Length: 237
Image 1 (cartoon, rainbow, N blue to C red):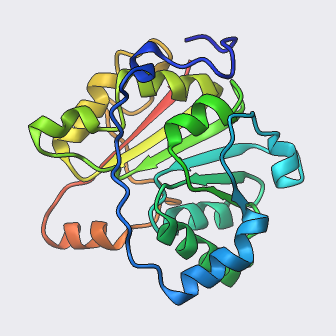
Image 2 (image 1 turned 90 degrees about the horizontal axis):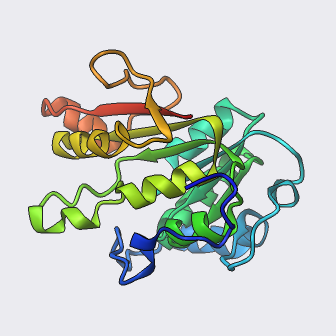
């Protein structure tokens, strides 16, 4: 896929009977999360439409942009936004309680450079983000779908890599992390051979955890149990 493709173009493998990488689980919404959504979503939330976004209007300035796909409860996204106030940060997460938790942190810390979308990342990347508009993409601990019969549901697939390449600027950085070794190997099998990406790690193919990616509570638990975590970084050619 080239940077000049139409904003509405979609890889053929995503057009027909697309297998979703997520299941909408109606997790418990706390009163605080609901209050944050009610009060803050009109300013910090982005509703989905098939029209492309003008990110300068969304953020009220022209700045470098990063997106985090599947931000969970938003700890990593908020930490990055606080460490990089010069960067506009768009989080995409289908689960609304997570978005509510993100907005609670935005309110608590007075963060102004974060926006959130509660929609399927494939459709956001396909329709709302214009080509070569994003400087960095973060995908941390996506669902590993560890059973073999579910591997087709994994987010990182060749067609999704095409979408990432479409929205990233040349020289932009894609960062990933997983605590499942098999999924790390799967990610590398997809991205190491993708014509639009270069693995920028050392000879191991993996990176140390960057300082601005905080340890999640699951990651801390994994460390205590001796589990590994694999960080990766790719540059858009």
